[in-house]
Length: 109
Image (cartoon, rainbow, N blue to C red; front, side):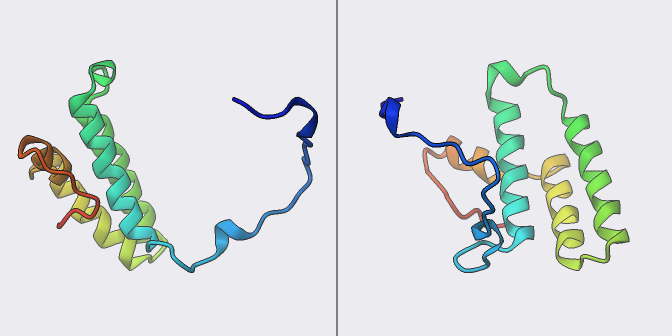
């Protein structure tokens, strides 16, 4: 990887707090929607993922739906409903952009 051999020190007990910082981060529900859309896109387009069924993804979304409902997380609840509709019935914005030879980083839902 190009690292110098003598300059690496491993700190197994170091505590890191930056992953909890809210500054310059997407809202959890929005990043969740984008991750699931990307996963759906890769399942549909990659040959090595042809063994993965859409039903499995939908089943996990149902589990996330109930988890958000029981946890009373409204943003995740409605995001899960939206993403379930897109995966089950609607067009994936990433897949449509690929067909139109576009590149999107912020899909409109």
